[in-house]
Image 1 (tube, one colour):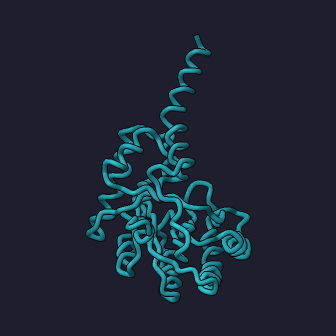
Image 2: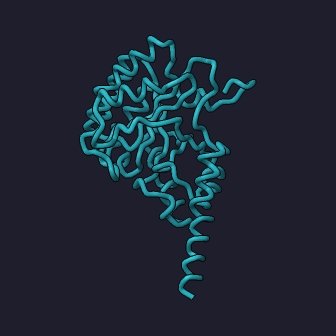
Image 3: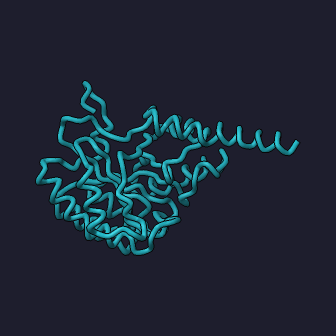
Length: 241
């Protein structure tokens, strides 16, 4: 009896959590994880903010290099820092949803999934006057309900091509720069983090990212790779998305 119950729980978990995540992550169905190659473009995204210690400096660096990025913000942090959200929007950057409390979808039921993301969208819209167009789930995890929810709400799921592990305790400006520049190619979507308060993140991690960011942007420029908004690569027009 006990073994049958365990098997049932495992089966339900596979259907509710593992299968939807595998479909999205490995089949690239219904998500954006890279742009079309051949146009000399890369996309820069920042997760887990806004953070008053780091986000303003990120904005300064992006302005210095005259590039636009997409900030996937945590709803609770956005609500606590509305001026930072306004600053991001006024600078011409995109703002996407990253959940309200950065909770893993695998451990979130349907009702909580809807509440988490509706609240984040509401907070962003109240501050900026615009609903978020893009959604990135914490840790890139989905559940069966979230697939339907995001598509029904018209949210474009945006993942990434790879990440630099910039949030970890072992990360340094040099390691972040090296990992990014050794791998980044035309069409890639890069993920960095402008807050170190997420689960498992090094509290001072974004300081390393900030030191690496100018070096990365300088080298992208040298390689003739343009940093473009996420919306530019999300639009598929005559095969140019």
